[in-house]
Length: 217
Ligand code: DX5
Ligand code: ZN
Image (cartoon, rainbow, N blue to C red; front, side):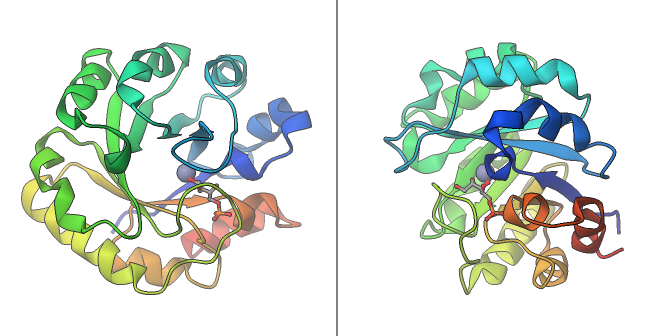
């Protein structure tokens, strides 16, 4: 089994020192940078948009995993790609034209993902699996870092992995919300390929050690 990909979420970083937060992630052993974009409408919180991504993009060669928590993402996905995303994911709950939005991301030369909230039936992703590079299983309701992993989420991860194995073998299963050193190994065993970690990395006194421990090293 290949090692889990660890994607620290810069939402939990210090916004006044974001350049250094991003720069330091590679040396700490992170695999991806998880970039949480919130619009204050789809979720009750606001973060940042294109300019932040453009400005931090040259500071790291890590894979930029952009998670859009915005209403009608179709309007904006192309601009997130040109701002420097390597992968753009958006929410099933936030867009009527899911297939069309995935096509725009792909034709802009970027990888695409579809996120589902903790209360969505995992089966809703089935019609889109053939287009997806990533299935994002939310294990908290999106909006804030530092929330508690929702009980019962391991079954949802396992279900997503089973669908992936059967219908989209090259897609990755990503888990986002409440991942910590205590639950990471059960999340990996349930089928996660990628784990987002905000608080568990940025809140740790030794971030390098935290990333290793999340991977189970
Ligand atoms: C939640 C965001 C997550 C969040 C993860 O809305 O999508 O990426 O920042 O933070 P932790 O790991 O602290 O739950
Ligand atoms: Zn996220």
